[in-house]
Length: 398
Image (cartoon, rainbow, N blue to C red; front, side, top):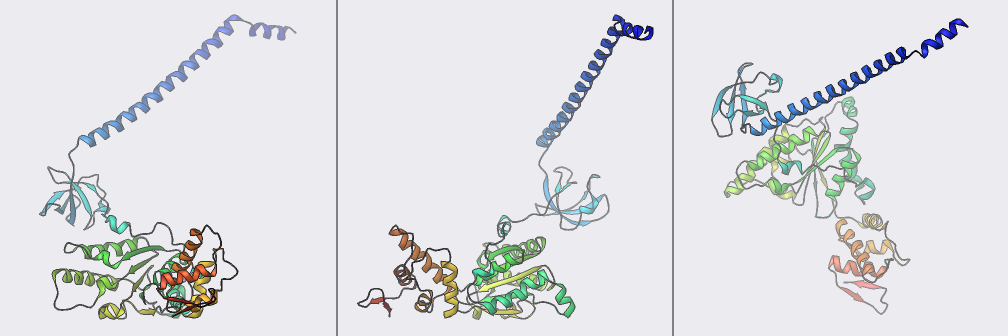
């Protein structure tokens, strides 16, 4: 009892209470000092960042040069953007591993010393050729062309997805494939379908884009496109309308013709530099195979030539089914009849007929597309004269 009474007395002792309060005040002061110290450190870091940014703004702009040769760890030969070459010093902060011949570097305006390693330049036109998203076209969207699609898959898709098969057999896959046929037959559609199914980067360029105004620009674009394809591997490089730069070379010609021939020679060189077992596959398409240069057609560049013919009756039926599967068709629409009536039409023509038939229905504020809509659309797209018999529902094409 005496001990408990003494403890209660001590707890109520004013001196003890004052002591505890002083300790709490000391703790609060310590916490406050820590907060002030942390704020001061943060402000100091922000001040240093702002000073660095201000110094960068006030600093003179750097000259752009190209590293020609690295002499040692302290000196190098660079070619300035103005033209001449110089022996310059290298800042100690520069990573020596980044200094390889051909690298773009930033040079100090006064001393021309290397103060920064710049990334490789890429033409905006070349970067725009890469499709950010894979094409949405699948094999089910390609009507007919079963045999042609099988060959294309063996050449392009199979080496990307199952390269071990070629190692086991002991052969190299074909390096490139050339698709040729009339316009609208499905060449570009097949290339997009393969790119979708193979999960590869799809880079598309039109052959005429290689034709530039200034000498050497076309060859430079060819080099940068193939470089981009290597960086984005696995990738598929699709060159549409290759006859724009791949036509047969002649002795006589204007300056522009000779520049196109230089671009073609650069293309031939890039095709020779590709490994058939690499992760970059090349597809080219043309409507005029007969005018292509023999050097472009030889084995080792475009090993496989696939003809894309106009669709036959069964292929036209498949194409009509593909383009009408989302349409609200009337009960009188006969796909087989439409396929017979569009003899000589291409896949692009059939797609246009389906679109025009839908537009005829929309024009009359209908949600259902009937047989007569398709017949009028066929007249409009294919340009055939239609002679009606007594029964308006049984047109005859002449």
